[in-house]
Length: 209
Image (cartoon, rainbow, N blue to C red; front, side, top):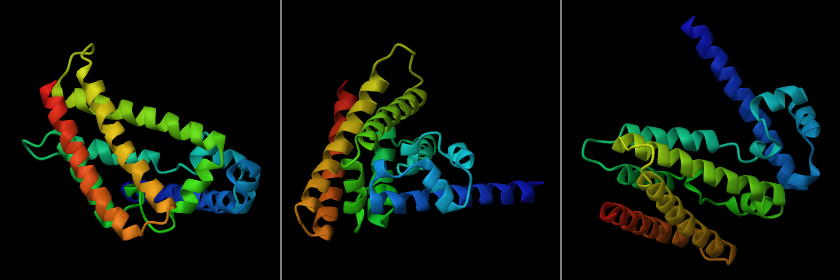
């Protein structure tokens, strides 16, 4: 039974990845707003219903790594080393992804195309903002869980907002530099320093609060 469930899960992940890859290719070629879900389904060899089973919203076909991001931050906070703060655990995670070139690290050769697709689509920009808010809520929940906070305690929400704001500020700066033509490796190196510094500052601010 375990082997059967494992195979079933692998097939589901393969199907999800196929649909997302096909959709992303079409969006890059023609623009997000010029491609329909029906066209994605046809190109992927599945039904439109199957597409929506995996991706409730069209925007999530392109912003498909959000569930993985939630999984990674959840694991980093809950499985952090004894004595390590939740913010330090996230700093370690983010810097590690950047160092390893993880797709969720945010900076890699060819990402200019990804950003441009988002910038060209009001729907994608709106969904990206929603996901940032949802992500902040996830982090706030993890911080509250780690601290054993009362439901009315604003500290976890404040801490999460500061983490997201710090990450976003460094991320946008990196994007602007790459779009301006700065060498990728220089941007990545500076991003690591700036991200480390920003999240350490957040950690100190939270401790003071």
